[in-house]
Length: 59
Image 1 (cartoon, rainbow, N blue to C red):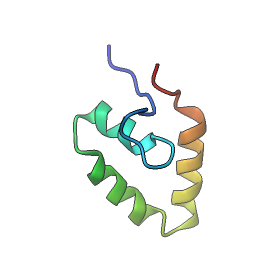
Image 2 (image 1 turned 45 degrees about the horizontal axis):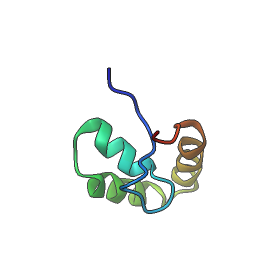
Image 3 (image 1 turned 120 degrees about the vertical axis):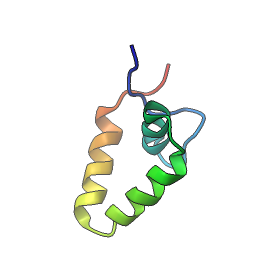
Image 4 (image 1 turned 90 degrees about the vertical axis):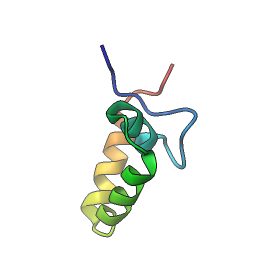
C-alpha cells in the first residue's frame, strides 16, 4: 500500500513536492513547476503550508 509522505531526500523547502512526485511516480521538478505557478496566488501558498503541516514526514 502506497502512502504519501514528505520526502527527506528530495526536498527544497519542506519535501512536499518531492513526496508527491515519489507518490505519483513522476519527476518532482514538474510538481515544483506547477506549484510555483500556483504560488503566484495567495491560495497556492496557503495550500502548500497546509500540505506541509498535514503530510507526515518520511520515516
